[in-house]
Length: 473
Image (cartoon, rainbow, N blue to C red; front, side, top):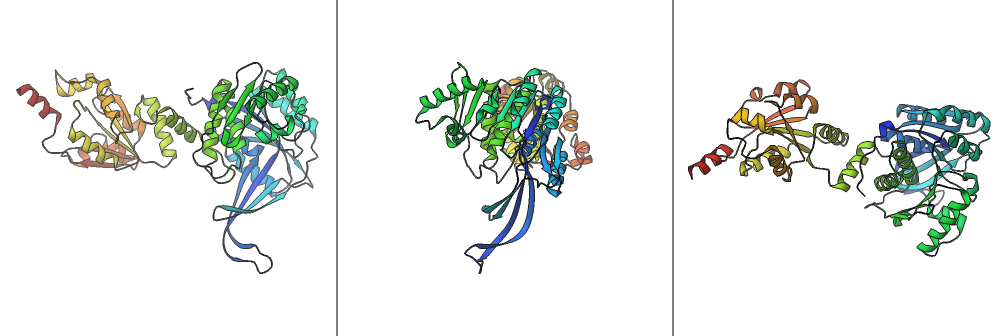
């Protein structure tokens, strides 16, 4: 299927579940402890990241979805750290802060990108489940999806009450399940167990047929809308009542750390459904998102630009002819990756060796090259009757085929100044015998701190000379 980027800004999701703090201590190791045969780590960096249901919420906020989070914490600095980091990311938090109990913390000691030990600080929370349900009911009219992120830490004790509340508002319920009893999730729209969690409920699956058969039985027994079974290197399988199963192979080329991959799957899935995507497309997007996050260290989330770039690579749309709206999105994504944007413009009527050399030189000045092409009417106004030789669509198609060119767009004005004001490239490039202050649009680019470069052209190589030579024959 062909994937497209959902309108995540239209998505709104309520996450309810077990909130935790993933704490990382990084340091070097150079000796073994004299007290025990273990390495001594000299800590030089400390890092806190939202984990569990908080990581799920953070993932959705990073994609651009409006996100609410309900969970339980202690009355401590770890809860403050979570609230601050989530709030700064745009997640609206509603924590039951329970005095005398610690916020769940998973502390990982890291050295040279390897985890040496994990230390957990946790107790099962004694929450006020009626207060939690009341908070959920109050927020449901504002959201399009309810997501239950269950880690078995005690926040979720009234699953059925929450599922029924969502159904009363016609809101789908997605569940990342935990434990050996899935009956507590009866009536949910979709469960997303991994293979081990699924087999803990239904027994070992010896082959694909058995997996499908047992999944269908579980769907019927629990009155589920469907099951999405994540299977590691075997990808993921979507099963729905009386429908053909959908299997998606794993997309990751390099697996660095699978921590939090399940959170990425369900958060992308929920955000995509809340944005109006069909379930199959949402699952495919979640599969793609998981392939990105497993290449990162530790609990991580993906951003909208990262997902959009992955979709572009997947569909072959990372380069080529773009409208202005498409181009502005592509530029924003490239900048989010730290890429320098180079801009040049011209008629490019008959592409020749001089053009190719010039564009390759321009491309070397940054990470992405935009070529803006005069449309047919503006070429005629500049060059006179008989020009252009080739229509703007053909000129752009030829330019888009060059390896040095990333994006091609067209403009109707006599100059590209309006484009420059919209795109704000890091580098403006022009070819010819000009001084910088003679380049059209240089004042615009220099005013916001960009660069302007004038490149020499290849001698005895020009479109006019080619046209004159053809006429002479």
